Amino acid sequence: MKSKIGIVIAREFKERVRKKSFIISTILMPVFMIAMMAVPSLMLMFSKGEKKEIAVVDNSGFIADKLVSSDEISYFVFDHDVDSARKMGDIYGILHIGDSILTNSSDIRLYANDAPSINVDEDISHQVSKIIENEKLKAYNIHDLDQILDEVKTEVSLRTFDNSDEGSSTSSLLSYIVGLIFSLLLYMFILLYGNMVMNSIIEEKTNRVLELMVSSIKPAQLMLGKIIGVGLVATVQILIWGVLIALASGLLIPALMPANVAADVAAINADPTAAISSNVDMVQALALFGNVGQIIHIFVIALLYLVGGFLFYAAIFVAIGAAVDNVQDASQFTGIAMFPIMAGLIISMSIANSPNSGLAFWTSMIPFTSPMVMMSRIAYNVPSWEVAVSLVVLFVSILAMIWMAAKVYRVGIFMYGKKPSLKEIVRWMKYK
Image (cartoon, rainbow, N blue to C red):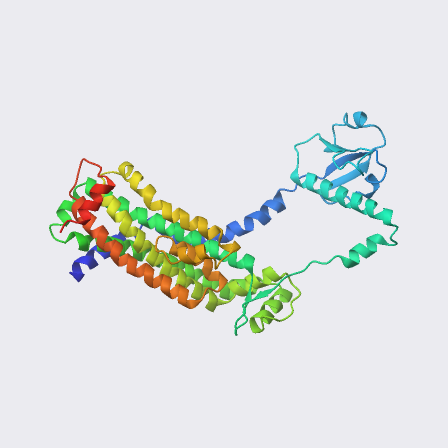
């Protein structure tokens, strides 16, 4: 029996690992993800166009001379009326400030001779707002008001710590991003490889290959071989990704960090309460991604939920593939199967508001949603017993789901020409 299942596993594994799509997605995807991180910076670098000139017609008399030009925008005072200014076609636009701007904040208009720019709108709104605020504060006759405001201006960088003996440093933003990335990763893998198993069964059933195969191997053995074979492909892929990311975190990230940032990272790694001068969220992110041990810990848990989530949903997709004759007929049932997956992903996105709420706890225990939800909670230092219970419930549920799928598979692979109803599929499970 083991040798027969082993043959099926080896066939399914080798067939998919040798495909170009697997090699490309496994090797190039991490490179692509790193490149995508640099895209926003590159876009900002190359999207800067020519310097925009804006003529300012200021009827209020106190704003135009206070507008500060930048590398992208140049303001100059235009002493004539708006109609004359609007006839100029060799500038970006005309800013008209009304005489009632101090009491009517909407008495300001921009006439653009070129395509509107969000950056210009934001710069004008921000500067004019600050100028008006300072002008209103002058009515209180406070000496050196600008200097006082600059001196009292303070930005608080809140650092949070786990209230336990370890006292480890945490970051709500970083935890949310890490949890969401892993939830999306599991969502993608479960759907991708679950559908892969289903489509393989539908194809073999359509070509009548299964009828020949079951003459030398039991349907349950064939089904298990397919599930395990495809599951190994997913496992190998995420292991390769984990190794590449661990290498990057251990070698690449420390080499690219500036000296002052590297010192701050080393400081909070040694003592989470240490004072740092760099941006808190950035330092905590680099400390996490530069900690190979922590990266491996997260990937091990992710791997367990990937394997568990895949086996659970693969059994469902196997039953769907065996019950229908083509992909079109399968769409009705896959929609039902995808609903809890989508629900788990949606709940994962809302975890940041309350990672230990009742909804978060119970959906991380229910096997239909636990892979995605628990991975989004894991970055919030979830108690180990919750993770253990969630995994036990998930893997016990896998045994029950595979048993039911085997019942459907045994009957469904010999059914042709009719799309069964859910009631009929349930009846197949009762056959001895």
